[in-house]
Image (cartoon, rainbow, N blue to C red; front, top):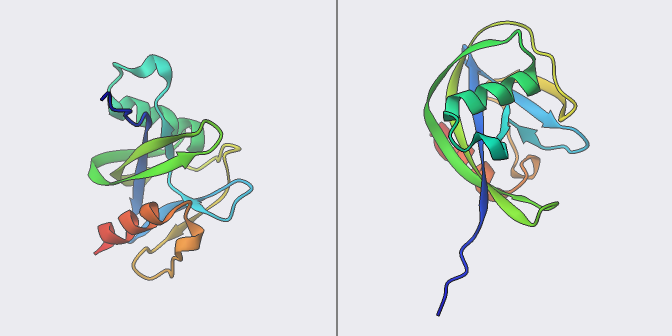
Length: 139
């Protein structure tokens, strides 16, 4: 019997630290937290992951921001309802260096928050798996 495998799009995000704080974005028209980054484009199949992430960061935060990408922090899945499929999202550690933030229309606000002190709630995330991966990473 032939198996019916899941099809995923891949996305890359950055857990951008500035001292003890991390950059959190609010998704436009939703009360959910997000991190900078996004999906790989169809033509980026052979593009290095860090270049895809750099493009997404430029698109979402503007071209002035400087940062350093580190190792993989955590992963989770997020359902993309419009396309009836899932995204497999890999979040990288990152260190803010300099530059101002200019948000794209995907996000309506941002905050630098201390993730060990701020009270996050699972309903402020698109799904439980995402919230659980984030909380596990902080341990």
